Structure formats: C-alpha cells, structure tokens
Length: 297
Image (tube, rainbow, N blue to C red; front, side, top):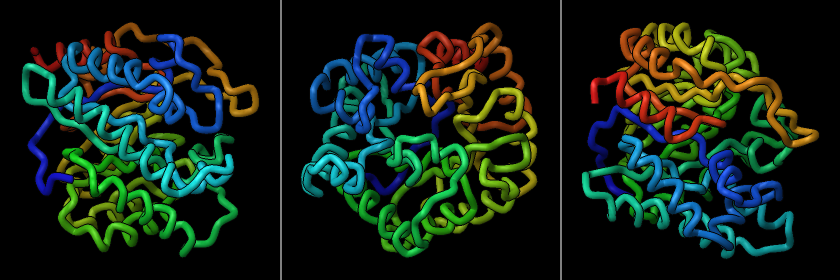
C-alpha cells in the first residue's frame, strides 16, 4: 500500500446495492466477495460508474472478506487472502484506467459484517478482545500488501472495536488510514458510546487520513459533523445511507428511499465542516454526481 494519500473531497456511493441493481447476486454469506470471484467485470463497472460520476476515491469490494468468513464455508485462509487482494486489485485497475488522477481504498468492515446477521449495526459480539484484534490484524496485513492508496476501516459500531483496530494497526504505522463509525443518532455510535470518544480513539492512528460516519441516516449527519469537529478531528468524512432500515432476517431494505435533494444535503454538510462527502448503502452514481455539483464541479 502507498505510504501517503493525496487529498480528496468526493467519495463513491453504495457498492453492494449497486451490484445488485446490475444483476449481481449478493445474497450469499460472501456478499460482494462472491461477485469479485465470479463476475469481476461487474464490480469494475460499478467503480468506473462512480469515477465517471465525479467520485475521486472508490472503495474496493473487500469490506466483508475475511478468513473467518471463508472458513465458515469450508474454504482456506489462503483463498480468503487472495480474494481480498483481488477485490482491491480490481479497484486499483479501474483507478489506473481513469483519465484523471483517482484513488482506490481497501475497504475493511467490522467483525459484525462477517457474521452476515446485521451485527455491525449493534456491535454486540461473542468474541474476546484479543481475538478481535487478531481478526483485524490479519486483514490489515493483506490490505497493506496491495496497491491501494488508503485503508478504509468502515462501519465501526463501538468504542471497543475501535480500540481493537487501533491496536491492530500498531504494526503498520505508515499506512494511510481512515476510520468511520456507524451511529444511531448524531452523538452516539450504535453500540452506545459517544461518537466523540470513538473519534478520539481513532485519532491515535499515526497515518490517519480522516475520521467520519457512514451507513448512518442523513438526518443525523449534521450533528455528527459538529461532534467530530468538537473532538478535534482534522479531516471529517461523512457518507450516509439513504435513511432506510435494513431487515437482517429477510435481508432487504425497508422504507422509502428519498434521494431528492441529496446534493442540497451535501452542500449543507460541506458548509457545516465536512471535508469529504460520499454515500453508503443505496446511494447511486447520480447521488455522487450531486455531491460534486455541491462543490461547484
């Protein structure tokens, strides 16, 4: 992985939901990882669409890939590591094909994402702290060996998992990293700790690029920005979902997705102190195009 990361303002949007809209099957336990293995050209097409819409950085389809997840299916650690590296490679290849300078992030989700039962949205795990550190360290080591520009540790649900990630990163002081939390309101992560405390934990990372919130309802973002600024975060990143609810039992989204005015919201977030804006679940290239327009691009 590169040891420095140039500045960017616009992130991409939802990956898994966009893959599904393009006909890919993300219903299995490997989620988008299965698409990387079976139809990498579809993943590449989504990355390309976000770049064309104005995103300056795309996140690889590596979010849910882990040794633990592959073992559950009777597959090997080596296969898991290759899949993670391959997902990042696809994003880097599209980055390198872009006519303008763009970035690719190696995305790593929380332990709860591997459980594929919605646990990342509450953070209550039946796993010890040292095991959690090991889980993250294994994946970070693989991502560090790729050509990604930055490591994105996303949808972190708790202060405890943030601490485990910070410890796991101790052996990788030169990696450019951003950490992003999932919140239940504008002040609190979904496990119940203050966002400010989580942000301050994240700020111990030597190569920190930014701290933010993702997969959080848009109505909470403005307050979350204020909390992150109060914590002293030097570079605030926000990439909310569209405000729908996820039914983990039936594996579907509930509610009405109101995409109208996403650009207006983005303009308000930039004005409120956000340095980087993008989208998470259910946002699409057209939403990211509006984010760019909010910056006058």
